[in-house]
Amino acid sequence: MKKLALIAGGIMLLFSSAIFAEPHADEALKHAKEAVEHGKMGHSVVLVEHAETALEHAKQAKEAAKGDDAKHHLHEAVESLQQGIEHGKLEHAEMATHAVEDAVKHIEAGNK
Image 1 (cartoon, rainbow, N blue to C red):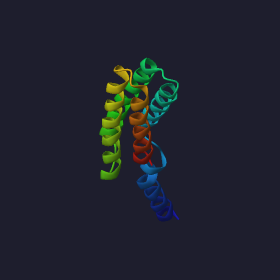
Image 2 (image 1 turned 60 degrees about the vertical axis):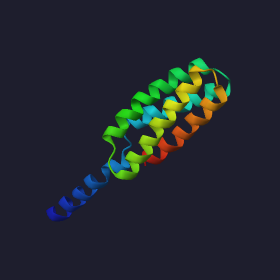
Image 3 (image 1 turned 90 degrees about the horizontal axis):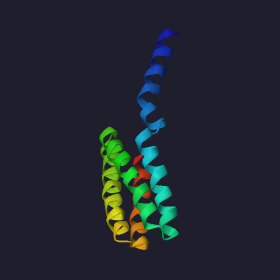
């Protein structure tokens, strides 16, 4: 019975990283979605604020990511957020919004 409990516990431990999402990725996703909402309203300044916060969290999530697929998606999210910030600072709300929308997709894919 103890062996069965140890095996079950080991299996749960192995899959725990897949079950529990990375907190920085969750924060990055939250702020990226906020950035998209404001971008759709044409609020470039607020988009940039949220995208910058999302970027910092996405960088930390990328460092903590396990597996090549997750790291790849979070790398792409970082690049998309950087593009969104650049466009947002130029007050190109539509282009900034599209870039951050791409980041959202990559954060979601990398945080599974």
